[in-house]
Each structure stands twice: as C-alpha cells, then as structure tokens.
Image (cartoon, rainbow, N blue to C red; front, top):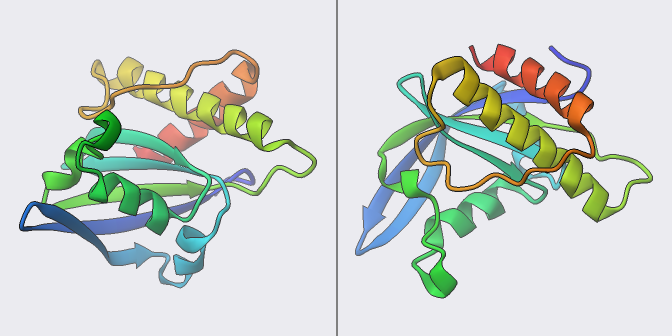
Length: 159
C-alpha cells in the first residue's frame, strides 16, 4: 500500500429503465471504506471489465455524485455521460488521495489531472491501447515527475 493514496475495489452494477441508467455498488473492498467514496477527497478512478481498461477519471466530489452525473446525462449541452454505463457490471478501482493542504483548488485539480493523464498514457504504453471509452485527457507539465511516479504506483496496483 502506498503512502500517497488508499485503493478501493468496487463492483458496480448498472441497469436501464425507460432510457434512464442507474448504478449501484455490489461490493466494496475493503468493506469499511464506503465513507471514502462518499468523501470529497480527490480520487482517480479506473473502470475495467474482464481485465480491459475502459476509462480513467478524476473526481474531487463524492464518487456517488460524480457517477450520478455520468449516468444521468442524456445529451444536454452535448454531454451523454459515461459510454460504459450500458455495461451490466464493471470493476471500479478508486484511488483516494489526501487533500493537498495549502493548495488552491485550481492547482490541486491540475495536480490530479496530471496523474490521471499520465495513468492513461501508461495504460496505452503497457497495453498498446487507450482505455476503450476514454474520450479526453487533460495534459499539463507542471507536475510531470510526481505525476509519472504516482501513475506508476497506480498501474502497479491495477496489474
């Protein structure tokens, strides 16, 4: 386990009803960690199915809130939500980070987006493919060395 993050594994199930998509967590490992997915601590989450990487995301809000946005979206302003929301079950790996003390919200967001981008790139480098439903990544070079190092740790946890 790393000093930089806490790793949670979730089994997420989805269902569709009259064109609306819904999600629920079937199991959370470790089981006493539900408060972390409900917290506003920064999170990098990785969605996988059958060992295939589907998506890498960043959230600074509750994961329940973030996933709710991705599942409820129906095209307003061009955003249709998660492309993987139609899959019946996926694995979600959540890496929860401590809040950066004395750091502005913008700088914190840039820091975690740099880790997210490096992780997506490392997945591409190691598998030969981008995550299947990855639409975008936010690049920046402000935190390059640290982002690469942490992304290495995340990828090691995922393999």
